Amino acid sequence: DIQLTQSPSSLSASVGDRVTITCRASQTIKSHLHWYQQRSGTAPKLLIYAASSLQSGVPSRFSGSGSGTGFTLTINNLQPEDFATYYCQQTFSTPRTFGQGTKVEIK
Amino acid sequence: QVHLQESGPGLVKPSETLSLTCTVSGYSMSTYYWSWIRQPPGKGLEWIGNIYYSGSTDYNPSLKSRVTISVDTSKSQFSLRLNSVTATDTAVYFCARDRSTGWHDYWGQGTLVIVSS
Image (cartoon, rainbow over all chains, first blue to last red; front, side, top):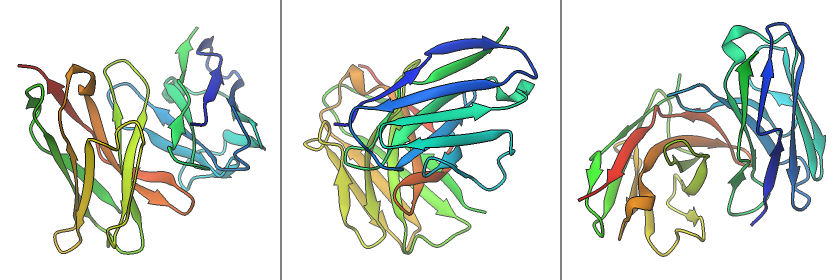
């Protein structure tokens, strides 16, 4: 299985901050890497697909980059509704796997 | 707008079979793959498997011996069966639509299944 390691596991930030979350794959996954946001008690929501494509309806303050084994999710101008847990997922090979999650908390 | 809704028992006894159905509305099931994903309380996400509208399946090897996913496009539904459950199968189970190379663009709200006697 391809392992995805997110860092950090959690972070504290303030409204207006820029936040960066990293996802590292145990082997190359080209650009088959996607990002989800999960607010407490709700289903995950797709933010970024194929490493850097913004899902329709998602604010442009979210962006993704990377390829191969290293990927980044950046949130500019953090908003109150962005406090949530973020997961990366690879779909390069079966089984599809998720990172362990990064919890973004209010400072 | 695509809407997915999971349904099924919220409590299953150990060693029995967990059965859930996902009803899809607002869009045809044709030409898409459909996935089941689960999340134990307080933990991360685990992909269980998926099914193409025509019936071909792909399962997580860690669960493959116990999982069956089926589809009934006439009812706009796909289903999950997980047999010989234990307490470690307690989780929120989500259904989702797959796009292109596999990301999930629409999700159900999830349903909590507890395995307990």
